Image (cartoon, rainbow, N blue to C red):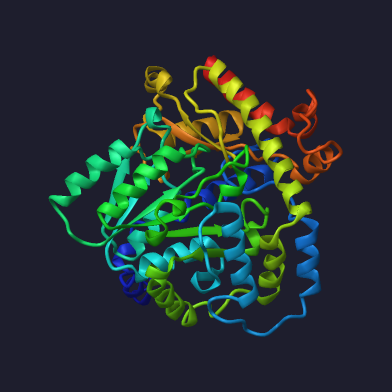
Length: 434
C-alpha cells in the first residue's frame, strides 16, 4: 500500500469502519455469482417482489418518459394528493397532501428521518436489515427491543410497557420507534387490539412512531390495519411502490406525516434539497396512477395476495414436517425460520451460528437464506429469513387471472408456476431430516 493510500485509509469515518454492504444485497450478489458458475441456486435471500408492475402504471411511465424537469423537492402535488387519498381510502386515517413527502425509495426516507430526528432510535428485533445500520452511520443512540418466536416476532403491548417503564428511569430524551408490519423478516402482523394498546402507550410516553407499512397492501386477506388510526398525531406512515406494485427498482417511496410532525418533514425536505433534489419525474407521474388505484389495480392486488397465501401455506407445511418452527404467513412473502430444534445436531457438525448455517446450506444444497444476525438476532441463535419469491411472477399472475379473483387456485398451480420455491423448500427440509 502506498503512503497516500495508507493516509487515505485512515480517513474513513469511524462509524463506517466495521460496516459491510447490506446483507440482502450481498446474498443476492453471491447467488448471482453461483448461478453464473452453473450452480442451481434457490434464491430465497433477497426480498424482491416477483410480480410485474401493473400495465396501467407501466403505460403511465411510458407516456411521461419525456418529462425532464426537476419536480418539487417534496414531490409532485398531484402525487402527494394521490398518496394521501390512498391512505384515507385504504388505511382509514386523515392524511393530507401537505403531510406527504416523496423520496427515492422509502429506504432513503428512513435515513433522512433518522438524520433530522434528534433523539433515541428504538428498533424491534427482528427488524429489517437497514434500520440499525442507518442509525449507526448517523451515530444515533440505538435501543433494541428483543422479541421471541412466542411473540410471533413482534412487539407485544406487555413487552412494550415493561420497556417504557425501564426507559423512564434512565432517559427523558425524545424517541422514535420503528414498527414494521406485516413484517420483514417474519411475514406476520399485529392485531388491532395490540395496535391500540401500543398506540396508547406511545402517546402516554411521548414516543413518535414510524410505521413502516410497505407490505400493508400485501396482507393476504386484504385486512391491513394502520396504527395511525389509533395514534394519528404521533405516527408517520411509510409506503411506496416496491412491494405491492412490484416496482422496487423504480425507487419511489412516500412518508405521510400528521400536522403535529410536519416540522420533521420540512427538515427532511431541506436535506433532500441538498442531496437528491427530487425523485425522477417520469416515475412520479407513473406513481400517480398506482396510488389512484382502480379496478385493474385492485384485481392485481387480490391475485398477488392469493398466490402468496397459497404458496406460503404450502411451504409452511413442508417446513413444519421437518420440525422447523415457523408461523403461518399473514402478509408479504417472508418466513423467519427458527431451527432451535436442531441445535445439538448443528453443534456436532461444527455449525455454531446462523451465519455458519446459511453458508453451509448454500454450499451443500444451493438454498440461499439470509442469516438472522443482520435482523438483530444473536449470532448463536439459529434463525434465518426465507423470501419465497423465486418464481416467475408474470406467468403466475397471468395464469391466476384467467379465474375470478375469489376462486381458489387449482391443485397443480404451485407445481406449474412456482416449482423452484416448492423444490427448494423440500430440499431444505430433506437436508435437515438427514
